[in-house]
Length: 133
Image (cartoon, rainbow, N blue to C red; front, side, top):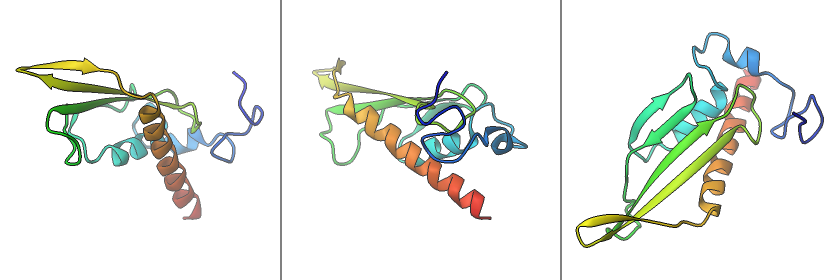
């Protein structure tokens, strides 16, 4: 698959350091994206985290600044070993309480994109910190 800035370049800068990033890490996906995802989702209760498959699933949560009759859940998918802009996908789910039942409600797709951007920014920071050492 072609990359945005050519075969050897990545949108987050540099070249493919994915093999050295993972040496000794014991996970099956890019370690920077994995750690950045967990750091970004720190405020949410994690229901399941699979570092080999690159999947993080949160439990339902109502943020303090949201109405008490709505809740959110996230699934994060890390799609490979390379630190690339298309290496993470986020699915955000929203439910609203109607009487005693919770009903799925649509959510602006920009919410997932903003979370992906936050994860990518954090991953880039982690990578830069590691390279400076």
